[in-house]
Length: 274
Image (cartoon, rainbow, N blue to C red):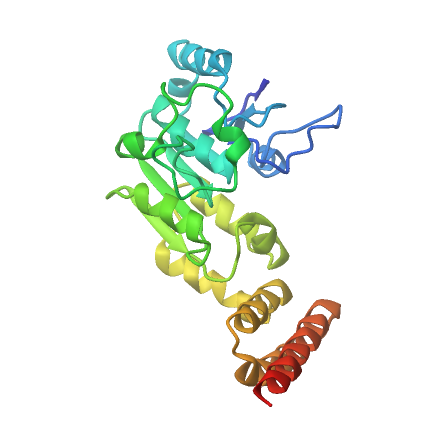
Protein backbone atom coordinates (compact mmCIF):
# COMPACT_ATOMS: atom_id res chain seq x y z
CA UNK A 1 0.00 0.00 0.00
CA UNK A 2 1.25 3.46 -0.90
CA UNK A 3 -0.01 6.71 0.61
CA UNK A 4 0.87 10.21 -0.50
CA UNK A 5 0.54 13.43 1.46
CA UNK A 6 1.57 16.53 -0.53
CA UNK A 7 3.96 19.03 0.99
CA UNK A 8 6.58 21.64 0.25
CA UNK A 9 10.33 21.76 -0.29
CA UNK A 10 11.09 18.08 0.31
CA UNK A 11 9.51 14.72 -0.38
CA UNK A 12 10.29 12.01 2.17
CA UNK A 13 9.76 8.45 0.96
CA UNK A 14 9.19 6.35 4.09
CA UNK A 15 9.37 2.56 4.25
CA UNK A 16 7.82 0.19 6.77
CA UNK A 17 9.93 -1.89 9.11
CA UNK A 18 9.10 -5.19 10.82
CA UNK A 19 7.65 -3.40 13.85
CA UNK A 20 5.21 -1.26 11.89
CA UNK A 21 1.66 -1.63 13.26
CA UNK A 22 0.16 -3.83 10.57
CA UNK A 23 -2.93 -4.80 12.54
CA UNK A 24 -4.33 -1.29 13.03
CA UNK A 25 -6.98 0.17 10.76
CA UNK A 26 -5.49 3.64 10.78
CA UNK A 27 -1.83 3.35 9.88
CA UNK A 28 0.70 6.02 9.17
CA UNK A 29 4.03 5.63 7.37
CA UNK A 30 7.29 5.30 9.27
CA UNK A 31 8.48 8.79 10.21
CA UNK A 32 5.23 10.41 9.05
CA UNK A 33 4.56 12.73 12.05
CA UNK A 34 8.09 14.15 11.91
CA UNK A 35 7.98 14.89 8.18
CA UNK A 36 4.45 16.27 8.37
CA UNK A 37 5.43 18.80 11.04
CA UNK A 38 8.10 20.16 8.70
CA UNK A 39 5.53 20.67 5.97
CA UNK A 40 7.28 18.12 3.77
CA UNK A 41 5.54 15.77 1.39
CA UNK A 42 5.38 12.13 2.43
CA UNK A 43 5.22 9.06 0.23
CA UNK A 44 4.62 6.13 2.56
CA UNK A 45 5.33 2.57 1.51
CA UNK A 46 3.40 0.29 3.85
CA UNK A 47 3.27 -3.47 3.54
CA UNK A 48 1.31 -6.37 4.96
CA UNK A 49 3.62 -9.09 3.72
CA UNK A 50 7.15 -8.97 5.07
CA UNK A 51 8.81 -9.54 1.71
CA UNK A 52 11.31 -6.67 1.78
CA UNK A 53 9.31 -4.78 -0.89
CA UNK A 54 9.68 -7.50 -3.50
CA UNK A 55 6.09 -7.28 -4.73
CA UNK A 56 6.11 -6.74 -8.55
CA UNK A 57 3.08 -4.44 -8.30
CA UNK A 58 4.90 -2.21 -5.82
CA UNK A 59 7.95 -1.91 -8.05
CA UNK A 60 5.79 -1.04 -11.04
CA UNK A 61 3.89 1.57 -9.04
CA UNK A 62 7.06 3.22 -7.77
CA UNK A 63 8.36 3.46 -11.33
CA UNK A 64 5.03 4.88 -12.48
CA UNK A 65 5.31 7.61 -9.85
CA UNK A 66 8.80 8.38 -11.10
CA UNK A 67 7.59 8.54 -14.71
CA UNK A 68 4.67 10.76 -13.70
CA UNK A 69 7.20 13.24 -12.30
CA UNK A 70 6.38 13.01 -8.60
CA UNK A 71 10.02 12.96 -7.51
CA UNK A 72 11.02 15.71 -9.94
CA UNK A 73 8.22 17.94 -8.62
CA UNK A 74 10.13 18.48 -5.37
CA UNK A 75 13.44 20.38 -5.03
CA UNK A 76 14.72 17.68 -2.67
CA UNK A 77 13.86 14.00 -2.14
CA UNK A 78 14.87 11.85 0.83
CA UNK A 79 14.36 8.13 1.47
CA UNK A 80 13.94 6.96 5.05
CA UNK A 81 13.72 3.63 6.84
CA UNK A 82 15.05 1.22 9.43
CA UNK A 83 16.11 -2.42 9.00
CA UNK A 84 13.76 -3.75 6.30
CA UNK A 85 12.73 -0.15 5.70
CA UNK A 86 16.38 0.84 5.52
CA UNK A 87 16.85 -1.71 2.77
CA UNK A 88 13.86 -0.24 0.95
CA UNK A 89 15.25 3.26 1.27
CA UNK A 90 18.65 2.23 -0.09
CA UNK A 91 17.24 0.04 -2.88
CA UNK A 92 14.62 2.44 -4.23
CA UNK A 93 16.51 5.73 -3.76
CA UNK A 94 17.94 5.67 -7.33
CA UNK A 95 14.40 6.35 -8.56
CA UNK A 96 14.95 10.01 -7.64
CA UNK A 97 17.82 12.14 -8.89
CA UNK A 98 20.46 12.97 -6.27
CA UNK A 99 18.29 11.67 -3.44
CA UNK A 100 19.37 11.65 0.19
CA UNK A 101 18.98 8.46 2.24
CA UNK A 102 18.82 8.02 5.99
CA UNK A 103 18.89 4.31 6.80
CA UNK A 104 19.17 2.67 10.21
CA UNK A 105 20.73 -0.81 10.23
CA UNK A 106 19.78 -1.53 6.61
CA UNK A 107 20.20 -4.83 4.84
CA UNK A 108 21.97 -4.66 1.49
CA UNK A 109 20.13 -7.67 0.06
CA UNK A 110 18.48 -10.92 1.03
CA UNK A 111 19.66 -12.75 -2.04
CA UNK A 112 20.58 -16.15 -0.57
CA UNK A 113 23.77 -16.63 -2.60
CA UNK A 114 25.06 -13.14 -1.80
CA UNK A 115 23.98 -12.70 1.82
CA UNK A 116 25.04 -16.11 3.07
CA UNK A 117 26.00 -14.48 6.38
CA UNK A 118 22.39 -13.37 6.96
CA UNK A 119 20.49 -15.92 9.06
CA UNK A 120 17.87 -13.69 10.68
CA UNK A 121 15.36 -13.41 7.86
CA UNK A 122 15.30 -16.84 6.27
CA UNK A 123 11.55 -16.72 5.54
CA UNK A 124 11.90 -13.44 3.66
CA UNK A 125 14.64 -14.92 1.50
CA UNK A 126 12.11 -17.46 0.23
CA UNK A 127 9.45 -14.87 -0.56
CA UNK A 128 9.33 -13.15 -3.92
CA UNK A 129 11.80 -13.09 -6.76
CA UNK A 130 15.21 -11.95 -5.52
CA UNK A 131 16.78 -12.00 -8.98
CA UNK A 132 15.19 -8.86 -10.41
CA UNK A 133 15.47 -5.11 -9.83
CA UNK A 134 15.54 -3.47 -6.39
CA UNK A 135 17.00 -6.61 -4.81
CA UNK A 136 20.60 -5.58 -4.09
CA UNK A 137 21.21 -2.06 -2.81
CA UNK A 138 24.97 -2.54 -3.04
CA UNK A 139 24.75 -2.64 -6.83
CA UNK A 140 23.02 0.73 -7.13
CA UNK A 141 24.40 2.64 -4.14
CA UNK A 142 26.54 4.77 -6.47
CA UNK A 143 23.32 6.17 -7.98
CA UNK A 144 22.31 7.80 -4.69
CA UNK A 145 23.16 11.42 -4.01
CA UNK A 146 24.08 10.97 -0.35
CA UNK A 147 23.41 8.06 1.99
CA UNK A 148 23.69 8.05 5.77
CA UNK A 149 23.94 4.56 7.28
CA UNK A 150 23.70 4.26 11.06
CA UNK A 151 24.38 0.77 12.40
CA UNK A 152 25.96 -1.14 15.27
CA UNK A 153 29.23 -2.73 14.07
CA UNK A 154 29.00 -5.25 16.91
CA UNK A 155 25.96 -6.76 15.20
CA UNK A 156 27.86 -8.93 12.74
CA UNK A 157 25.15 -9.12 10.06
CA UNK A 158 24.57 -5.36 10.12
CA UNK A 159 28.29 -4.68 9.79
CA UNK A 160 28.64 -7.02 6.82
CA UNK A 161 25.64 -5.47 5.08
CA UNK A 162 27.08 -1.99 5.63
CA UNK A 163 30.46 -3.02 4.26
CA UNK A 164 28.78 -4.11 1.03
CA UNK A 165 27.28 -0.63 0.56
CA UNK A 166 30.43 1.43 0.40
CA UNK A 167 31.06 4.45 -1.74
CA UNK A 168 32.18 8.06 -1.77
CA UNK A 169 28.57 9.15 -1.35
CA UNK A 170 27.98 6.90 1.66
CA UNK A 171 28.49 8.29 5.15
CA UNK A 172 28.78 5.31 7.48
CA UNK A 173 28.04 6.16 11.12
CA UNK A 174 28.74 3.15 13.33
CA UNK A 175 27.32 3.25 16.86
CA UNK A 176 28.57 0.58 19.24
CA UNK A 177 26.25 -1.22 21.66
CA UNK A 178 23.08 0.21 20.08
CA UNK A 179 22.03 -3.26 18.82
CA UNK A 180 19.88 -3.60 15.70
CA UNK A 181 17.13 -1.37 17.08
CA UNK A 182 18.68 2.00 16.36
CA UNK A 183 15.59 4.29 16.27
CA UNK A 184 14.23 3.24 19.70
CA UNK A 185 17.67 3.76 21.22
CA UNK A 186 18.00 7.22 19.68
CA UNK A 187 14.46 8.10 20.75
CA UNK A 188 15.13 7.20 24.37
CA UNK A 189 18.10 9.57 24.25
CA UNK A 190 15.99 12.36 22.68
CA UNK A 191 18.22 12.16 19.63
CA UNK A 192 15.93 10.63 17.03
CA UNK A 193 14.35 13.92 15.97
CA UNK A 194 17.55 15.98 15.51
CA UNK A 195 19.36 13.11 13.78
CA UNK A 196 16.40 12.47 11.46
CA UNK A 197 15.87 16.12 10.57
CA UNK A 198 19.52 16.74 9.77
CA UNK A 199 19.90 13.41 7.99
CA UNK A 200 16.83 13.80 5.80
CA UNK A 201 17.94 17.34 4.97
CA UNK A 202 21.39 16.07 3.99
CA UNK A 203 23.00 18.34 6.58
CA UNK A 204 24.15 15.77 9.14
CA UNK A 205 27.92 15.88 9.54
CA UNK A 206 29.95 13.10 11.09
CA UNK A 207 31.36 15.51 13.67
CA UNK A 208 27.97 16.79 14.78
CA UNK A 209 26.44 13.30 14.87
CA UNK A 210 29.04 12.03 17.31
CA UNK A 211 28.78 15.26 19.29
CA UNK A 212 25.05 14.57 19.73
CA UNK A 213 25.85 10.98 20.61
CA UNK A 214 27.71 12.04 23.73
CA UNK A 215 24.32 11.93 25.44
CA UNK A 216 24.53 8.14 25.37
CA UNK A 217 26.88 8.26 28.35
CA UNK A 218 23.94 8.90 30.69
CA UNK A 219 21.25 7.01 28.75
CA UNK A 220 20.01 3.91 30.54
CA UNK A 221 19.46 1.75 27.41
CA UNK A 222 23.01 2.36 26.23
CA UNK A 223 24.50 1.75 29.67
CA UNK A 224 22.58 -1.51 30.01
CA UNK A 225 23.69 -2.64 26.56
CA UNK A 226 27.28 -1.85 27.47
CA UNK A 227 27.06 -3.77 30.76
CA UNK A 228 25.40 -6.77 29.12
CA UNK A 229 28.11 -6.89 26.46
CA UNK A 230 30.81 -6.87 29.15
CA UNK A 231 29.03 -9.64 31.04
CA UNK A 232 28.64 -11.76 27.92
CA UNK A 233 32.34 -11.33 27.22
CA UNK A 234 33.22 -12.55 30.71
CA UNK A 235 34.56 -9.23 32.02
CA UNK A 236 32.79 -9.52 35.35
CA UNK A 237 35.52 -8.17 37.64
CA UNK A 238 35.75 -4.95 35.67
CA UNK A 239 32.04 -5.09 34.86
CA UNK A 240 30.74 -4.95 38.43
CA UNK A 241 32.27 -1.54 39.29
CA UNK A 242 31.27 -0.27 35.84
CA UNK A 243 27.69 -1.41 36.47
CA UNK A 244 27.72 0.25 39.88
CA UNK A 245 28.83 3.46 38.19
CA UNK A 246 25.99 3.10 35.69
CA UNK A 247 23.46 2.85 38.51
CA UNK A 248 24.90 6.01 40.04
CA UNK A 249 24.53 7.79 36.71
CA UNK A 250 21.06 6.49 35.92
CA UNK A 251 19.29 4.73 38.78
CA UNK A 252 16.32 2.83 37.37
CA UNK A 253 15.12 -0.77 37.27
CA UNK A 254 17.02 -1.53 34.04
CA UNK A 255 20.42 -0.45 35.32
CA UNK A 256 19.78 -2.10 38.69
CA UNK A 257 18.85 -5.35 36.95
CA UNK A 258 22.00 -5.13 34.80
CA UNK A 259 24.07 -4.71 37.97
CA UNK A 260 22.31 -7.66 39.58
CA UNK A 261 23.00 -9.83 36.54
CA UNK A 262 26.65 -8.77 36.49
CA UNK A 263 27.09 -9.62 40.18
CA UNK A 264 25.45 -13.02 39.64
CA UNK A 265 27.79 -13.68 36.73
CA UNK A 266 30.78 -12.78 38.92
CA UNK A 267 29.62 -15.18 41.65
CA UNK A 268 29.24 -17.98 39.11
CA UNK A 269 32.67 -17.24 37.68
CA UNK A 270 34.25 -17.32 41.17
CA UNK A 271 32.57 -20.65 41.92
CA UNK A 272 33.95 -22.18 38.73
CA UNK A 273 37.41 -20.86 39.55
CA UNK A 274 37.33 -22.55 42.96
